[in-house]
Image 1 (cartoon, rainbow, N blue to C red):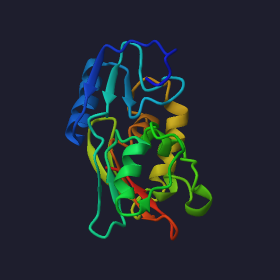
Image 2 (cartoon, one colour; image 1 turned 30 degrees about the vertical axis):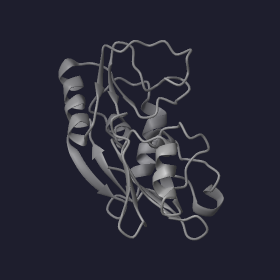
Image 3 (cartoon, rainbow, N blue to C red; image 1 turned 120 degrees about the vertical axis):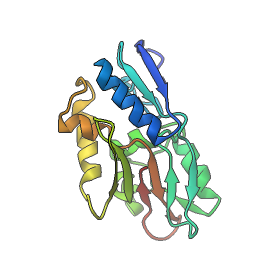
Image 4 (cartoon, rainbow, N blue to C red; image 1 turned 135 degrees about the horizontal axis):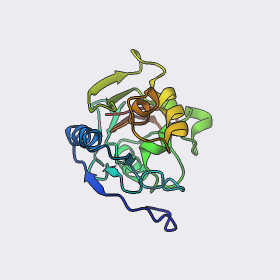
Length: 200
């Protein structure tokens, strides 16, 4: 946890290295009736990524970033920090509109909107999500391209703000809270055109 004053003790921590791992951890939490939280970068100041006596889905094993062949899209894991994404895109002279602190998690930033140095030119991080690979509250994995689900990211951001302290359930808020198990970002040149972010 970034905030050293947060003192919460989860019962279990699932360090995930794939979407399948995330799905299995979500299913395990449901079977155990354990409160579920997701840790992307661990940067949230109130420590909402850790639930007392709960199961933490730790995405730190999902920090890979790769660019598409044309370098127009970056695919980023759900545990990526902004520094990971910056380094991955910089090799091709690209960027993803993101925050200002390199050790912030991309997932949490996007769920909160994603203000950063370039938002006036390229929009918020959440505006640039091209698609998401989504793990629902029952552990089901679905792919949600923006063209098919244009408000997916907005629903996730709203749910993140309203359901962070709610116990896991089958409610739509909980499903939305778990929307970004991994992230893809689509990048554009630093000086032209908007960047896009996707999630996987």
